[in-house]
Image (cartoon, rainbow over all chains, first blue to last red; front, side):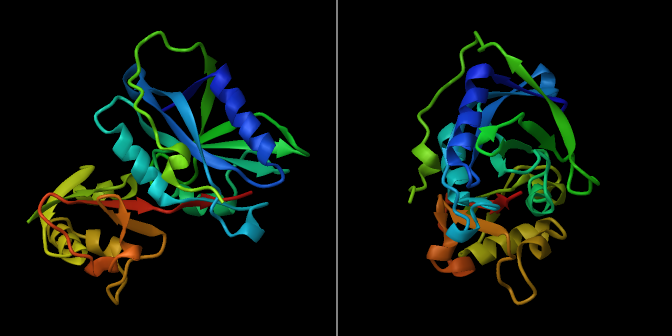
Amino acid sequence: MTELRITAALRARLLDHAAGGYPLEVCGLLIGVGEDDGAALRVTRTLPCPNVAPADERRRRFAIEPRAVINVQRALRGTSERILGFYHSHPDAAAEPSATDMNYVRLWPETVWLIVPVARGAAGLPRAWWLDGMDAAAPRELALRTVRPSSGPVPCPDLPAHGGVPCE
Amino acid sequence: MPVTVRIPTVLRRLTGGQDEVVATGATVADVLAHVGREHAGFLERITTEDGGLRPFLNVFVNGDDIRFADDLRTPVRDGDEISIVPSIAGGR
């Protein structure tokens, strides 16, 4: 895996979510398809999820309710789309996996971890990370390429809003 | 009673790369133990020495979290689906 492809519209949606949540961390799922025999992944949609970390920690922590993953996996079953990974924001911090992030990245190898930095309310350049396996020393950065919307048909079953997890 | 167990990426090395396996048992614990007999090292990665579920792992039966049922003693039936989902969290 070397590249994550995303349209400008979806990229803007991620940045809007991150900036809109500032100074709290926001998070969600990246859904998409594989391309080029698995050498690249293309995001077909993003799904914001509630940050279920303890309320007083949400300026520096995020958590996604695992039920959201189950709900979305079940909705996508039998389609070409799947959960590619997760995104979250880093308010006033770099778009690199933190030590806290790494505790969970190691539980989700071969999964995209996209981080959107937000500096004083303005979203910056997102970066995507990938751990080749649980024994890999560190995650690799994936090239994040902005692409045109796909002309090919992508099955689009309805997804449960927020992964089916109620917002507070 | 055959039950499908969905395996997360982090555990697939222990199931020969399979993303789902079929096992039998009357409870979640029984089914996971069956998988453990077929795939060495699997059960140790799922459960603690006292038989509880390891931290940072979540188990669902047909989409329902076993924490809100009877944990690993939750009964399963023929055709049920058990999903193992690692926790998703982090922060700056």
